[in-house]
Length: 504
Image 1 (cartoon, one colour):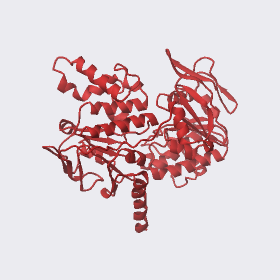
Image 2 (spheres, helix red, strand yellow; image 1 turned 120 degrees about the horizontal axis):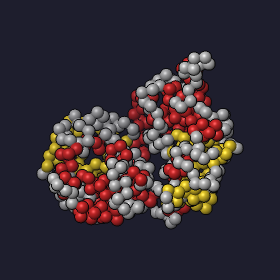
Image 3 (tube, rainbow, N blue to C red; image 1 turned 120 degrees about the vertical axis):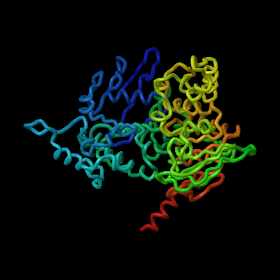
Image 4 (cartoon, rainbow, N blue to C red; image 1 turned 60 degrees about the horizontal axis):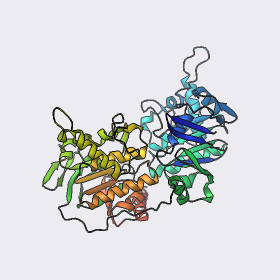
């Protein structure tokens, strides 16, 4: 393609040549800020490439700027991270968005024809159990992903075009991934093609036929055949150096102090949970989707009102049925939520204001906000977490995902919490940013902070946690000390399977 894209003096893409063959799943990987998002936006017609760049698909040279009609004619369709579905509309309505079938004479939408077409597309994906008339809100994550793929297939002739999957497995539970992969393989088996953009190197190795690495806006050393390479080689190309998967568990003795104690914690799913976290300990919580582990971070920090339960941290005891986020923050409890864009950051504010926001009321006055402490605190966070660019004045929405995640973590670390609670702290970040984040979590524990990490990622839990609690049906069902990936996977999934067998 020879695609290039500049933003002022910044070259986001530099002469990117990428060929996706019919019948293949082609992986595209790179660190946050490597140019992947810019490439997707070029393919979607959101950005205009630099002069001299060309985009071709199935023999079509697509003009610049690329119009949606031209992209549809060329068979380019994108499945975004959040699937882009409208919960209040039916499956058929979601599949039809943007290209409705109209009756011949009235020009009104022919909904019977739309439902038949939706059923045909779902049948091609071996998903006949999904009712085209069902509201999307009633579907599970795996079914929603299939609807998004069906919509992408709508304007493609069988055996033509390419589906671009932009981190489309992020929202899927582990037990929904195999269905997604099977659906994707069915698409390419008919002669189509898929470009899979992912941070998950294990997924890339499992699903793709070939893989291309971007670094600093350029392709690194051509395209690899997946079967002939390794995760380590892909990571080396991404970073420009060899990366070691380190275990970050604290090795020093635990600092003295009273543990954080939680008693009788109850929410919508969590049911009567008791737990303790000692100063300097990293406690992991995990389980299958909906088991309660993913509700616990929000109940524990006052972000979601508990039905019952108390937390004691030092001399402070809080009734979690009454204490909101403000009281928990005042007691030294900090939450790094799962969704940084919706819940963790103000994207239009500068990096410095995001980092210092929780402490402005305490450090400022009624007349002015002291800038000296803001500058000092922001500079320390940017240096400690290696945030790029190291500038306080850049709107946080302009940073890559990995650097946004570091800013969100740094915002709460700068407040020196006594209890730090994190939900999926390394979600959708590259391998280098993941190492930085896990290292920061371990360093926080070494300073005597009690840490809770809620995650479905066994590798993260094994790397950083001293203990892991496994949830099932809202309760703690297992505890793993000095956890390994294998032990976490076995406790989570073999336990689930055993329960399902007994139910049958």
